[in-house]
Length: 381
Image (tube, rainbow, N blue to C red; front, side):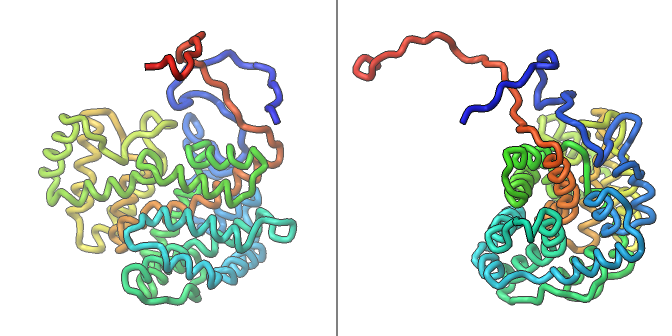
């Protein structure tokens, strides 16, 4: 069936990667410009300082901050859905240790969609809450089994997702500082307007596909180092240097040889990523408390050099790397932690897309050859 013709309302603009193109409207978040970053009108600074991730997830999904009873009920529902179906555990056990954890998240999401498909009884809100609850176990169950061969429980008594994840990972209760730092990180990563993974999810569900397909596609987009994978690449770079002086010399060499320095710059900000102000202070705090001030000093030296040399600022991924490292989160898990948070933003955008859906199908300017004559096969060289 062909696609309906749509009236051309805007003049065509040529731009790389759709930069500067307004692709739709949203009530979910405002990024860039005078807004800095807000979730449904609330400043991320206020949310990071005062809220829990569960409050922010509820805000994104239900378009309001929860009351006490609503938050209690929401947390209870999530806590009851942390365990994984046995068939999913069996699939996770078959994924090799060499797999990237983002591939694990993608596969687990898709497979869960076959076990618990979206339906009238198991609607988009129920699917989202299930994924929010189950993602920590999906990641950590596979990690422990792949690296130790042991099957660990997927359920803890931790009241929050932040504490639950760290408890599953380390098999012990985390410190209050680590719980707070993880909570803040999840809040900062929860939503960010029409980024690549969110736009991928919206495009997929605009075809009237199911929510699992949209989220699986979003995970695929997030896997790339130009989007979510930057925090892993940043940590791999930072850990190469023992001193700020080594870092300056090393990064200068990278710039001289035109290598990418991951974790810097952003498509919607020109002077600074507002989230960096928050996560940088957590990096400073955790490095100081853990006796690894040099890790922070190396990071800050790289930040200064990149600003002086390229007028590029660190984005959220850059200092998140050292925050996660100080909580003993394995580097390959950094982007999957992003997934654990961003599912709230992805789902909110999927809900919004469905409310007033139009198939997302942009046009392209053809630049290839024209009016070629067909040459029969026997006459081709």
